Image (cartoon, rainbow, N blue to C red; front, side, top):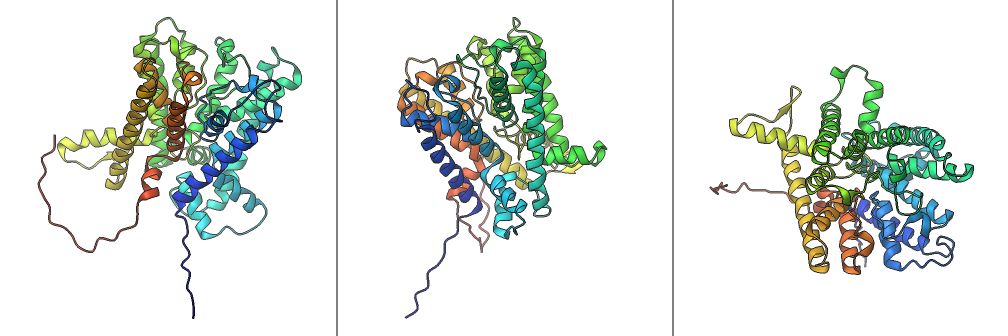
Length: 434
C-alpha cells in the first residue's frame, strides 16, 4: 500500500511572519541570559520579549533603558536584532548563501521579492549583494562621523560602541540608544552635526534600497521610475511640511528640533525634545507623520508614502471619473485597492489597540494611549513616557501592534487568505454608498 503524504509549503508571507517570530523568540532568550543583564538588574520574561520585539520590529519603544539594564553583550544582541529586523532575515540569510557561491532557489527568490517589495524577479542576486554592501558603507560612514561627536563626552572605546550602535539604529529606523539615563538624544538637542548625521541615516534607510539604487545609477530624474519619483517627492513634502507644522504648533522649539522631529517621526523614533512636552496639536502632527511612515522596501514602517500618495491621487481623480495618474503614468486599479485596504486595516489595528489600552489603563490620558498605539503599529518608538508604566496586558497589546506593523497590513491579510479561483461572474447589485 502506497501512502502519499502531501507536503505543505508555507506561502512567502507566512514564511516571513514565522521568521520574524522565531528571531524575536531567540532574541528574548539571549537577552535573558545572565551575560546580557548587568549585575543587580532583573529582566522578567515579558520585558525581554518586549525589548526583543521592539528591536526586531525596529521600533524603539522601551520598558527598560538599554544602557542601564544590558551589558555590552546584551547591547550587541539588541544591535544585531535591529540589523536583522531592518534588512529582514530573508535578505541576510540569502545574502550569505549568495556570497558563498551557492544557487538561490526559485522559492527563495519569491520570498526575497516579497520581503523587499521588489517589482520583479530579475536581478535579485545582484540586489542582495548591493543591499548588504550599501548597508555596510552607509552605517560605517555614519558610525565614523558620529564618533567625533560622542568622543567629546565619552571614553574612546565607549564612543566606538555608541557610534556603531547609533548608526545601525538610525539607518534601520529604530529609536534605540545606549547613552543611558533614559534621556535619549536630549543632551544633543543643539548639536547640529549629530542631528544632521542622524537625519541623513534615517532618510537613507527610509527611502528604500530600490530607490537608493536607482538614484545612484540614474542621474537624470526623467529616467527615474514612478516609484522613485513618488518616494522622493513625498519625502521632501513630509519632511519640510512636518517641520513647518511642528514649528507652527509649538513655537518654543527651534527650527533644528522641528526638522529633526519631522524626520525622526517617520519611523525612526529618536527624540531630542520630549514628546510629552509637545502640545496636543503638535502630537497630532507627530501621529500623522508616524502613520504615514517611510517607503516600501525600506527599513522604516508606517502605511508607506506611496500608499498615501495613491489614495490622494485616487480621491482627486474619482469625482471626474478619470484614471488615477501621476507623472504621466497610470496607477493600476489593484494598487489603488491595495492602498485603501492598507489604510483601513492600519486604522483598525490602531483603533483596536487604543481601545484595549484604554480599558487596561483608565488613568492614562487618551492622547498618550493613542500616540503609543500609532507609534507601535508604525514601528516608530516615540512615546510620551508611558511605555515603562504599562501593565502586562497593555504591553502584550503593544507587542502585537509592533509585530503586525512590521509585517504590514497586506501581509497580515495574506496570512489567513486562501487562493480562490472564481469560475462564475455574479450579477452586479446596487449598493448606495455615502
